[in-house]
Amino acid sequence: MFMIISTKNVLFYVLKSSPLIVIVFGSILLFSCGRSSMDKVTQVSKDCYYLHLSHTRTDSNPKMDSVAERIDFSRFDMLWLGGDLANLTSKDDETMMHADSVYNFGDPNTLWTLGNHDYTDVSLVSEYTNRPLYYASHKNGITFLVFDTMDSLSSILEDQLELFHNVMDTLKESSHLVILHHKLIWMYGNPILEPQALSISNVGIGDCSFCINPNNFYTEIYPELIKVLNSGIEVICIGGDLGIFSSEFEFLTPEGIHFLASGINSGASANKALVFHHDLIKRELSWKYELLVNLQ
Image 1 (tube, rainbow, N blue to C red):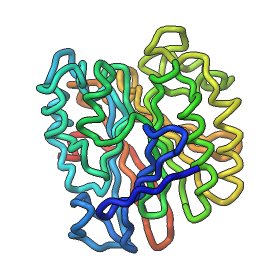
Image 2 (cartoon, helix red, strand yellow; image 1 turned 45 degrees about the horizontal axis):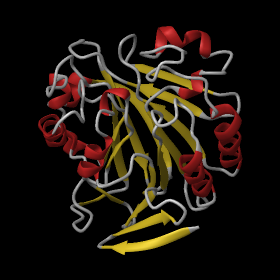
Image 3 (tube, rainbow, N blue to C red; image 1 turned 90 degrees about the vertical axis):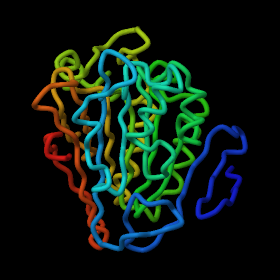
C-alpha cells in the first residue's frame, strides 16, 4: 500500500511496509520538456530528448572520461546514468562532488542505477541524489523503474521485488515502461544471449559480486513484463555494464521486449551513447547510438 507525501511540485509515493522505497512522480505539464528545476518550466515542445550514458570511469578518482565530462547535457531533457561513473564514485566527497558537478545527481531528471564502482558508500550516494538506491518515477507518459542490481547479486528480491509488483499495477496511463539497471541481468538464462556474455558485457556469468550472477529475471520479472507489453505498453530494459568490448547492444525478444545497453571505454575514439527521441504527441519513443564526440 502506498502512503502519499506531498512536497513542492513532487509527490513521493512510499511503500508503507518499507519507508526506504520511494516512488517519485514529478508534476507534469502537458508537452513540457527541459532539465530545469521542477518549479520552472523553460521550454514547451512536443519533442523530448533523453541520454543514456554509462561506464564513464577512468582508473583513478575523481576524473571521468574527458569527452563525457564535456557533453552538453542541456541538450537533453533527461539523463539516464547506467553506473560505474568513476573509479570509486562514492568513495569520498571529493569524487562525489566532481561527478555531481557533471551529472547533477539531485535533479529529478537525472536517474542513476548503481554499478559496482559506485557502491563504496551508498549512504553518500543517497545524500547527493535525495533518493533511495532503487525507485520508480513518471515523466511524459513514461514510467521508470531504477533497479539496484548490486543489491542481491543480480536478483530483484524482497522490498525491491515488492516495488516492482506495485509499480506494475500503476501503468494504465503510461505509454512506455523503461527499466534502468547496471548489470545485463537478462543475459543469464537466455539461450541466445548467455553464450555472448563474455564478448558483450563488461563481465561474464559468475558468482562474484560484480558478475552477472544467476538471478530471477526470467522467473519473476519477465513474465510480468510480457503482461505489460500485452496491455499495449512498450517495455524497454536498458543495461549499463557495457563499454569494454562495445558501446552499443540491442536485442528484441520474441515477445517484443527491447533489451538495450550502452557504455563507454574511457579514451576510446569510437565511444557512443544512447540518445532517445520522444514524440509526445504520437507517444512514440525512438533511439539511436551517437558518437560521444558529437554530443559536446
